[in-house]
Amino acid sequence: MAQEIIRQLKLHLELLQEMGVEYVPRCQKEIRRRRATTEKQAKVEAEVEETGQEARESRDNPRLEAVREELGECKRCPLWKGRKHLVFGEGNPFATLMFVGEAPGREEDLQGRPFVGQAGKLLTQFLQAIGLTREDVYIANILKCRPPGNRTPQPQEVEQCFPFLLKQIQAIKPRIICCLGGVAAQTLMGQKVAITRLRGQFIPWRWGIELFLTFHPAYLLRNPGQKRNAMQDFLKLKERLEALAKEEEGS
Ligand code: SF4
Image (cartoon, rainbow, N blue to C red; front, side, top):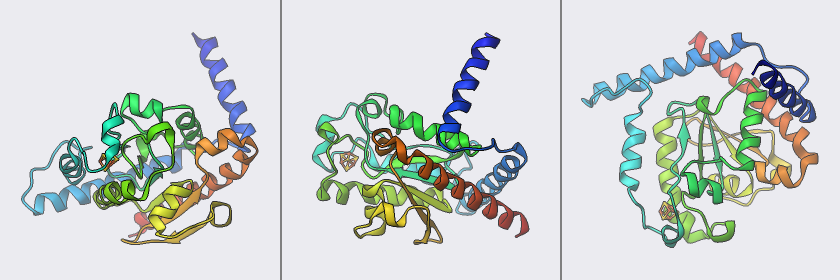
C-alpha cells in the first residue's frame, strides 16, 4: 500500500516536472485562501438571511440552487435530445476562481459532471500543481449538453444556454473566471479572440470579475508541447489568487 502511494506520488511529481513545475507550494498560502473563501461564504449567507430566505448548510448556495431549479430538465435547444445527462457544473459554490470550458464531452455526458475525461484529468493535475483541488474551484461549460460528436457549439445553442451560465456566475460571484479555450473566451468576451495572443493576461470583465484566458486541456492533450506555457498561466493564476487573498485579509 505504502509503495503504491509512493509510486503514484512519483508519477505525479514527474508529470509536474514535465509541465515545468519547479516546486510544490507550501500549505500556509492555501490556508489563507481557504479562509478568504469562508469569509465570502459567510457574507453571501448573511445577505440571504437579510432577504428572509432560510440559511442552508454551510456549503450550499441558495442562489445557485435556484438557477439549477430554473434550468430544470431543459429543452430550450435541440441538444437535449441526444444527452444522457445535463452537466450543470460543480465545485465550490462560493469559489474565488471559476473555470469555463466549451461543452460536455462523451465522458461528461455519461457521468453528468464537467471535465471528468482525459482533459479533465489534466485540468485536475494543473490545479494540484498550484495547490488547489477541484473542490476549491467551480467548473462549468458554455453549453450544458453534449453537441453530437463534440462539434463546436452553434450560435443558437449558445444563445439559449449562456444566460444560465451568467446566472451561475452571478450566484457564485467569483473574482476570476479562467476561460479554457477559444469558445469560452469568445462567448464571455462577446468577440473573436486569439487565445495565443491574450492568454496569461487578466482582463477586466463585468461585475468586478477578471477574465483569464488559457488553452483548453483537450488542446494540450493534442499539443503537449504547450503544457509548459499552460503551466506558466496557472502559476499566474496562483499569484493572483494569493494577491486577492491578501487584499481580503486587509479589508
Ligand atoms: S444545451 Fe443548454 S439550452 Fe440546450 S438543452 Fe442543454 S441545458 Fe438547455
